[in-house]
Image (cartoon, rainbow, N blue to C red):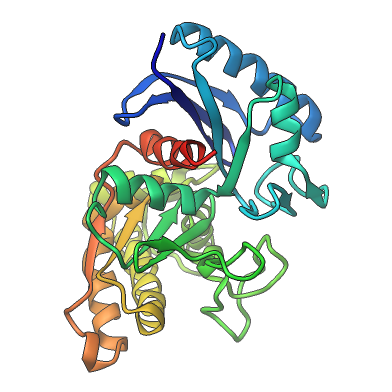
Length: 319
């Protein structure tokens, strides 16, 4: 291969998705490795490097890779480190010099690193629902709740590289749930996939309301989604509650940066048929009249894997 390509990597709590991307934004080859098979970062990086080298060979791209872009939880764009990422099994080891370690494992290829939600926002801005927008907020609804803030066409990183942790804004200040970050009442503790499943378990314990969820030993957010599609009243109430909390939070976010749109991305966003109405209702009920019915709520137009891979790959073109 004569033309240059880059590698985009999306590190999630359970899986790591990797792709070789050309200058047109085409993903030439992809692979997936487990993120949660190790409790130490070194064997994880070794396994990742083996997968990446095979991926490059499969794309016939040996010698053509310009660099590697990585999106990961708690990733610092400025330092190349992953810092205390509680949703990663190996991520709570303090400051992990991830970009440096991966570069060494990949024989010196340069590596750039950013927050996973920022990477998704970059992918959406370049190729998806936010194409042409200069002011929007990306919200990722997955294992956690992440966010990427774009103002005047630029990612907001703040002075230390960690701007945009909107999932850890406090939604319930009295007797709020414990969040993995150590705080209580965080948006993430209620509106992530894990939070939805937790709501289901709590509500089942607190009432005798009939629900098909009662027959399950272990409940996931997908189980709640499937039940809602079947018309289960408790499941529908759970999504109404989740959407209302999201809408209340979005109203506050709007008042900070006046975005053109809020873009929803991630596994839980597949439940948009149950989330959209309560989100919009709560958002418009809590925002200043100045922004009422002005900010659009849109959903990612990219395949879930591609958005983060493409966004992360955009970093590598700058190397």
